[in-house]
Image (cartoon, rainbow, N blue to C red; front, top):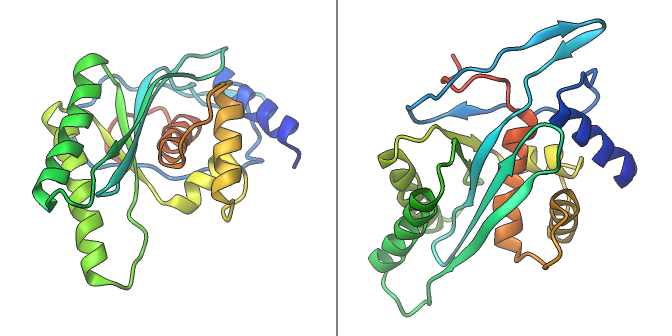
Length: 217
């Protein structure tokens, strides 16, 4: 599928028109409490019209030394708007607790400055090294804790599904992800890879949202 046609389909999704199930849909599962309104869906002719997502989503790509953050504003009938993005850089010389504190503070700062409706995180991929898994889990926990203290609904998406939802290819490269995210956002400045990944998670959430802030059963 060409990039132009892909963008048209996502524009249709944001506008709330039926898509006929032609593109893969990532499943979302909130891990936190704090719902704020439940969207409705309506049957229209040959398909189901889902309520388009409206509001701010904070996307997070957790990493101990380079967590990506991207806050995107979604409204029906227009392209998503990137309000702020940042990579939380923590030098290797800084100890483990300092890195976790920096991640927590950065997420807290975003949520203090903007009233995000949802928080979307990229799930930790499978890693064979136990120590690496512990480190990634701790970084993710620092971000989740900051969002949970603000009582924000938290959704998680596997990297494969994020790429499917945003690029249309589950095995898309980092470069493809950056280009597609920038194209969807109409963003002029080149995004860092971690920021693009965070924006991709937020886009994935809005594109595949099922109109319900509550935890899936």
